[in-house]
Amino acid sequence: IRTPVVVNCAGMWARQLGQISGVNIPNQAAEHYYLVTDEMEDVDPDWPVIEDPSSYTYIRPEGGGLLVGLFEPEAAPWCVEGIANNSSFTEISPDWDRMSDFLETAMSRVPRTMEVGAKNFFCGPESFTPDLAPIVGEAPELEGYFVAAGLNSIGILTGGGLGKLLAHWIKYGSPDMDVTGINIDRLHKYQATPLYRQHRVAESLGLVYQCHYPFKPLKTARNVKRSPLHARHVENGAYFRDVSGWEQPDWYAGKGKTPEIGPLSFGKHDWFPLWKQEHDAIRHGVGLIDMSFMSKFMVEGPCAGKVLNKLSTANVDGHKGTITYTQWLNEEGKMEADLTVTKLEDNKFFVVATDTMHRHVEAMIKKQIRDSNAFAVCTDVTGAYAQINIQGPRSRELMSKVTSVDMSNTSMPFRSVKEIDIGYATALCVRITYVGELGYEIYVPTEMAVAAYDHIVSYGESVGLKHVGLKALGSLRMEKGYRDYGHDMDNTDTLLEVGLGFTCDFNKKDGFIGQEATEKQKEDKSWMRKRLVQIRLNDPEAVMFHGEVVMRDGKVVGDIRAASYGHTLGGAVGLAMIESQSAEKINRKYIKSGTWEVQIANRTYSASASLKPMYDPSNEAIKG
Image (tube, rainbow, N blue to C red; front, side, top):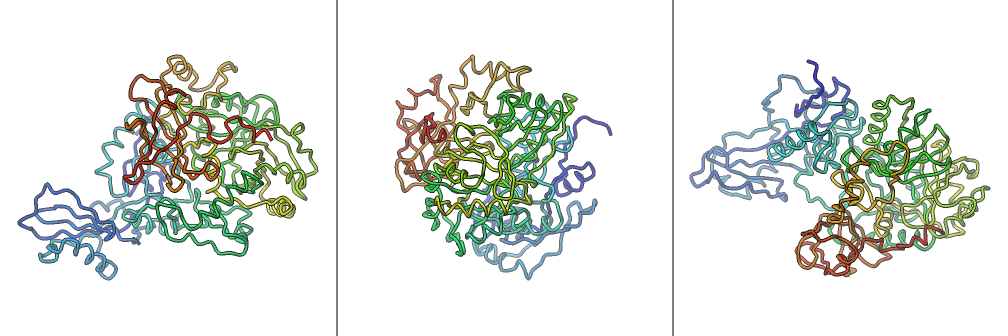
């Protein structure tokens, strides 16, 4: 069969079917149980489904009786080696020893179920994904190959919506819903290995009915990827979290101490003061952040600049030795990526993107090379370089101690790039920031990373250098209103709506993808009725995470897309997409004239709103 479009909806066989075409679909089947009682006279077939996560059960009418389903905390993987083609409607012999206690607890929620007989205690296979989100979209490996699989036991609920989403995607070339959390290209090949699938699926099924606390850590299939500085972080008491397979310090307990996350909650955690110390260190002194997990690509060849310039809203093919912050759009002018491009040589560029968009960005580069018949090549160099960020008002003071290169503002202004020495090591040093302070990103070949790190730390004590994790990175960037694609921006937003129109160069040669749509929206001002706005709670005790409802003058106008705690600002701070309820433009007057509130757990909190960054809106700190 020859066809321009294929949709893989093969359920628990999706991985194996995808394998035939070289497409990565790392879903895995596990045992799933439910019991069906004999008929019960007073059961109404129209009763709703009742869920009790504390008992790992759901209960609903079935065949005149009740069905008691289970999502136990640790599941049993099924056929990790591969599922036979003739396994449709497979029934597995139940493991009574493992499941009887869970079943008894579940049935005790409706005692009548224990007073009647049982038609069947069914065990059958159901597939789950590594992050409990569906696998949807066009495969990065093969153009025209779409996937809708890994629906994690809610296929009946989500199937209609996913069908509509895919139909639009196939017909028009892009999705009309936010797919940043479900796109197939978020997943990596290592997640399809047998051992990874075996270990992770046991946890994934169990997560269905566990409380999804904001900082709940994944426990299985860990330590897949480690920064070359991992051992040093352990020595400094790092609490690690899984970041696209990387073991990444989230915060530090301190040298020689064992980090304890403590009780999970929706409030402030036991390590909140440690987080604040790291945040304050970068605001007032200097901090070191290991960001080796960031996605890195080297794009080379005579057409490399042309390829990247067509993708980028900004002009990234200007002077050598310059880093440029830019966005990539689709033809509709909607967001696709948020990244930096550094021009190292006329035919050599260094692209850095967030970890969650690794394969998405890589696929976009390769597609543009392919579609334009360009003489260029894209190489994934993520593991080739450690990324050490030195950030804060005293960062230049520290860097001047560890290298012989002149780090003055004149010699190395904002956005400049230089090769520097750090002790015995050589590294690429970029003056840029994601925390709103004077700072540098240092890219060190992996084999020299520990030597460079040790050299930096040896001088760090004299300036109060502090190790800083991702929690502080998040709170620092949120105070500054810096965006993060896939969190506070997604593929349904336009460049102007998220406030990044300043990255556009409308006059560069050959333009950029999505330019016509962006210019049209700029002219008709429609973006003024939907804008990303910074929100801060006025009560310092309240916290936000995401999804909290935002109100203006008592009416719902949006929700918090991403949030953190602004230790400098003195309250929880987030970014919300606000939509005007009329033709009213969302401008400074709109912001200032309204009364802003945020609903959290059925309570309403007073809030402040701003279109400009609440921290250092004039960028004085960055100028150094």
